[in-house]
Amino acid sequence: MKPEIALVVITYQRPRHLQLVLESIAAQVGLSFGIEVCVTDDGSTDETSQVVEEFRHRVPFPVQFVTHPHVTFQAARCRNEGAKATKAPYLLFLDGDCLLPRDHVAAHQKYHLPGMALIGDAIRLEESVSENLTVESIASGEFTSLATAQETRRLRRTLRKFRFYNFLRHPRKPYKLRSGNFSIWREDLERVNGFDENFEGWGGEDDDLGRRLRRAGVRLESILAHTCSYHLWHPREATAPDRVKLAKNTQYLWRKGASARCSNGLTKS
View (cartoon, one colour):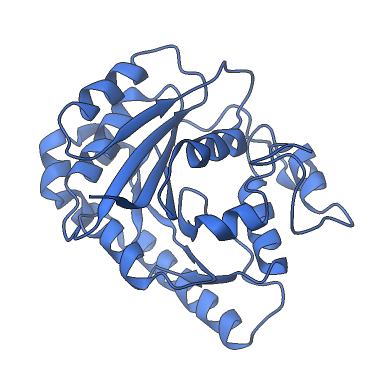
């Protein structure tokens, strides 16, 4: 079956998290369409590649693995490389530490429309919950019952805010784009030349993509009424700044004169 959706999964040095995420992909239901998976790696030196290879041999859809030498946190580069390695007309970007409920991919496929990107978010699982999850609990989907009431309320507030700003047809909000759980037509991503690889280190590349998509006329719509992912706990990213507003990526994000199409993205100019 020709893939209609490409799942692009970013990872770095978290093979157990990746194994569980891939298991949640294998457990997807309602797939009356073809999928392909590309794990795009930021230069892991552990058993990450073996995890992907084992997964590739036991699932009925194409699985690829792309990587590059690690220099610093390069999420934008990873996602661009994953997109370029796949062929499907629709792309679903995922983080290698975020589990998918069993109908997650089917929900993105059901609600995608031309000229629209679907924006999601993740329930943050507590450390003790994350450490006790098993392959069996992922395959059964029972992990979706482990969300705290606080996290559930937070996502409901996020959805209400998203709908409010869209109802007002606000020209800039909500610009937040959670790149660990969003989907987009390939042609719309190519219109803005993908993620801007000038973002290196933690943060900013997804906010920037959201702003540029809006400038290009792509509508951002929330998928939270239908699905969300579940974030596995891990220590704070080493490149995450203590003061986000003063970080280099934040300064670059709010630069003046930025166009919808970046120069250092899927193609370089």
